[in-house]
Picture 1: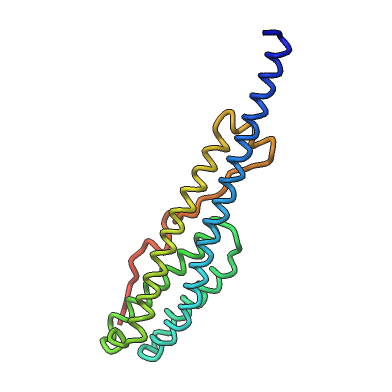
Picture 2 (picture 1 turned 120 degrees about the vertical axis):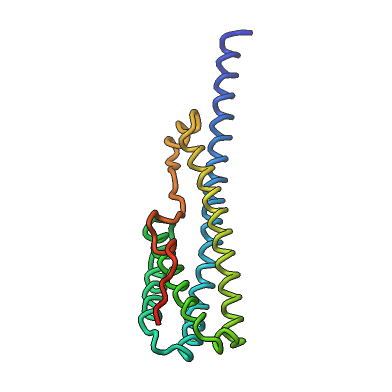
Length: 187
């Protein structure tokens, strides 16, 4: 084999490797965006359910105004947190989760409310939505993990840096977060 043939073969091999790595990054980034979109769909569903839940509970426990205000504030903060997975967005969503726990804890003290079909249906819908959010978070985080590993691994990191592919943030619970605490209910 001539040196020219070897050189052309090496160049062709490098070109194929660059194309393969580039396409892998494009696929991973698009999967992460799709996974984030799935989370947003479920979060929107939760945002839509919360006012109905609050109104139903208010009818039975109108004196629990502080808890309702916390949920309303947490919902507003979560809705305005932006359209990307950031620590601030995760914190806002987790504050909302914690506030919702307190509303369900309040509902435990009202047997009539717990038996109300609207409340039961809203609670079921919200529980289903929370499960879907958790599932979507896991899928998003696994996709972002794969992307981050690819961005950091050699030789893919050379290609990633050359074409501007960067690591993405995971959507995790911050340590010492409100959502991890058990709600305290006082009567």
